Structures are given as structure tokens and as C-alpha cells.
Length: 247
Image (tube, rainbow, N blue to C red; front, side, top):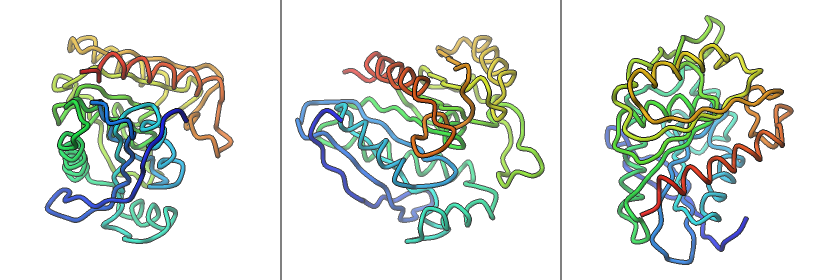
């Protein structure tokens, strides 16, 4: 962590006028800055995701993470809320876009904002990052091993979503993709397919895959954590945001 910051729980009017919880972090130096929406992974709105949100603020960015499971389990633990959301097949795409739009509006209205907003997501949040960036006017998007942008979940998966790669022509901003070469969701073949689709659509993107890393290699509290891949990934994220979120 580098700079001083303030972090707190806040509430927003999300999709359909629903009141949703969010975690807001902001640097205290008051300089105009870009902003990030952090989309949590399928395990939910947990302490690891809040730490990531604070990390963006420590690097000088406004940052907010919406609790996408507020409706399913208000006030529940992350594990219980995630279980409730999984039982319903995950977050509906339309609702996700509405909730992220509320976060983007909140960030752009803050006095420190320079008006430039990006989005980052992990696991299911990586897919949702791609969806948001194809649905909203944004300046940067970072997909961390988002599955089912290409392809569909196996029958055994609780996630009931469809592929969204056909939305590539609507991508509103440059996209950074960070993937594990040992991952199966998305697999290297699916990453290559998405790369080809974006190239054909003429969309600016930069993909990196890490040998020896599988799914969730950024997660410091899980056996899947790969320090070298995560360190390089964060360096690429900072460089990408500096290029795209500066005034």
C-alpha cells in the first residue's frame, strides 16, 4: 500500500431502483484521478475483494466494489450470499450492467474524479467486466480469467449464463486480459478464440497468459495463488490504467 486512503461501506440505487451495498475507497490527496469499478468473483463480496478495492485507492484511484448479491442475501456472510446467488444461477446479465452503471455514475460524480472510469473483474467478474465494457461507455477494462465469454458452463456448473463474445463489436474501451495457461475456464483455446474475435472486430486489447498458473492465481488466500504471475499481472494493470485513465 502506498498512499493514504479512506474506505467505507456505502449504498447505491442499482438496477431497477434496488438499494445495493458497495465498498468505496478513495485516496486522500484530492488530486483529480481516474476511477475503477471492482467486480467481485463468484465467492462474493469478501475481504479479499475489499483489499483489492483499497489497493486501487492506495495507488491513487477512486474505487468501488458493488455487492452483487445484496438482493439475494442482505447482511449475510460472503459464503452464504454466494451460495444463495449460485442457487439462482448467478447474477442476471441485465442486472449486472445496471448495478455497474450505478457505480460508474457514483464515481464520475465524485469531486476527485477526472471522468475516466475503468472496470476490473475476477472469475465470473471477468466475464461481467467484458459485459460491462460492451454495454457502458468506459475508458478501460481488465478481465482476470473471466470464463464463458466464449463457450458455455458445463452442466455441473451452478452458473447459468451464455457466451457473450458476440458483443465484441460494442466494446467501448481497451481491454487487458490476464489468464492462466493451466486454466480450463477459460481454456487457452477459448482465450485464443476471444483474441481472434476482438482482432477481427478491430478492438484494442492486450492478452497475457501465465505458464504454471491456473484459475484464481491472483487470490493470495487460496492454493491457486501464483506470486510471480500475480506480481507481473499487477504491474501490467498499473501500466494499462496509467495509459487509459489519465486525464
